[in-house]
Structure formats: C-alpha cells, structure tokens
Amino acid sequence: MSDHQQRRTSSPSGHSGDALPPVEQHAQQYETVRNAHETELIEDYVELIGDLIRHRGEARAADIANRMAVSQATVSKMIRRLNELGLVTSKPYRSLFLTEEGQKMAETSRARHDIVLHFLRALGVDDSTARIDAEGMEHHVSDKTLTIMQRFTEQQIK
Image (cartoon, rainbow, N blue to C red; front, side, top):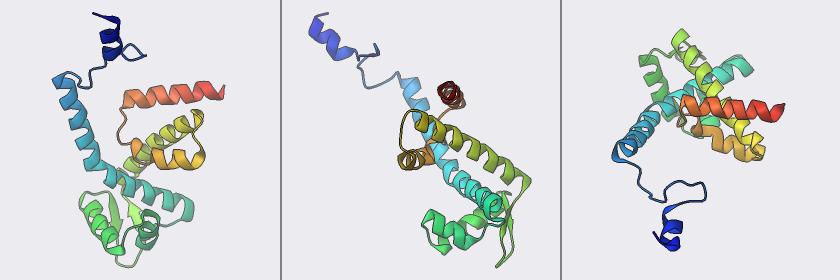
C-alpha cells in the first residue's frame, strides 16, 4: 500500500478511514438510536416533572409548557400518555405527581443527564453550551460510556 493510500484509509487515531462500520454494528447503531428516540421525550417529561416537584414543590402543566417551549395542548397529550404508562397521576386543574415507577425513571434520567453535563464541563465546555448539549445526549450514550464519562470527570476533580 502506498503512503498516500495509507493516509486515506487511516485516521490519526489509527482507526480505519472507512466511513461504514461492519453491517451488524451499523444496524445496531441505528437500532440503538431508534430505541432512544422512542423513550427520550417520555424521559424528558418525567425528569422535568421530578425536577419541578423537587425545586418548586409541585409540577403544573403550565410550568412544563413554559420550560419545554411547547403548547399546553401538547403537554396535556403527553400527560395523558404518561398517565396511561403509569408514570404520573393527575387530576384536572391540579399538580402532577410521579408514581413510584415515574420517580425511578426521573431519578435515572436525572443521574444520566448530570453525568453528561459534568463530563462536558470537565472537558472545558462552557456551562450554557454544556447544558444545551447534555439535553438529549443522556438518552443516546450507553451505560458503558456513562461509566467512563463519570470516571473521567471524577479524575478531573482530584
């Protein structure tokens, strides 16, 4: 292989320059993303409801709509869905409450979010950008990657 061909097929990290991973790996990547997309909106709502309850003592649909920049109708539809999934309980014109299952989901989602946020900050990303980037990333990283992110962050603090 010529020196020119070698440069075209290898990156500085030594990984192949081929843009396409093996078929099985590629299919798994897309399946993982599809599965994350299915749950991320639910997790975001449940996480926000948990945060509102923790910081304000209650979670109201109007607060959720304002913080997520969506309409009250959109929030109402999602609340119905969360209720059907057994994640929240609600009464008309009252605050929302997380079920035990919803509380567990909120805590897991918050922990994942915090790991990604602290990791980005440890890399030197400014707070505003880190908050924007972390929102959503927590749904797309594996537990293995989260563990490594957390370990890296803890090492940076020492």
